Image 1 (tube, helix red, strand yellow):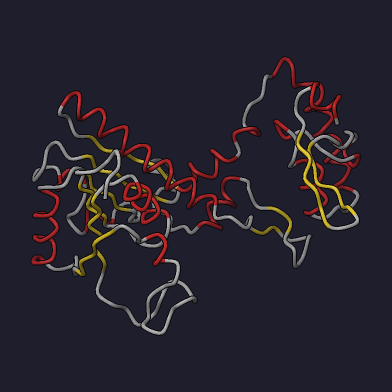
Image 2 (image 1 turned 180 degrees about the vertical axis):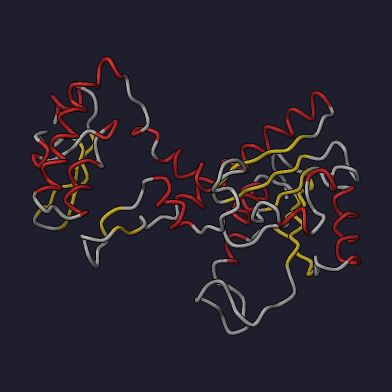
Length: 289
């Protein structure tokens, strides 16, 4: 396959979505992806399995790849991986921190076979701190990153957003990190370790709510805290609190519940034949609207 990464070989040791999604993107750009899969298991991680036992989603995120089934718990299986790594440009895995070391597939071990290798690892909660060894799926990362919203079944309960943002943004960060490291290697012939996490992906999605200028924001932030406090004391549901605080830039409340008016220029409206989304963030657009 042609593309900017044609001729680049990626050794893919990932499973689930965030890792295979990253190599899917690299494969779409022309890289040769060698996907190492574990021996078949009786249980499947997803419910949508076709008549021959393959995950339907895998037909999408495992496109543009060649695969090989290897038991990584055996010495013979690891020797095959070492041989593949010795002629790869990059290797990627998304094991829980510590598992790669147990399998002898960690960065320090792999780079002995290929010192110029780019080695990418993805975790749920990063590689430092007390949460680094936790197993996590997208819903857990969304909870840790503050992205849960009122559920459609029960507005009083938090639910993940419909798009797996930890997985999707995490895969983009991993692919970007690998491409950047390959560019660095092209100039210096130096390999390196690249690390990212699903929590990084969720926090990236919350970028507009993570910026605060204390001198400018103190007054309205105090009003927000006071308004939300009154809602809590009044028995407001989780959904009410999210509606009051989750949509504005910097966490600015968007309803009158906390004393701040609704942003009429950035919301959805009901019409006679469905819904319409309005987004006007500069004065000229607002005047024309």
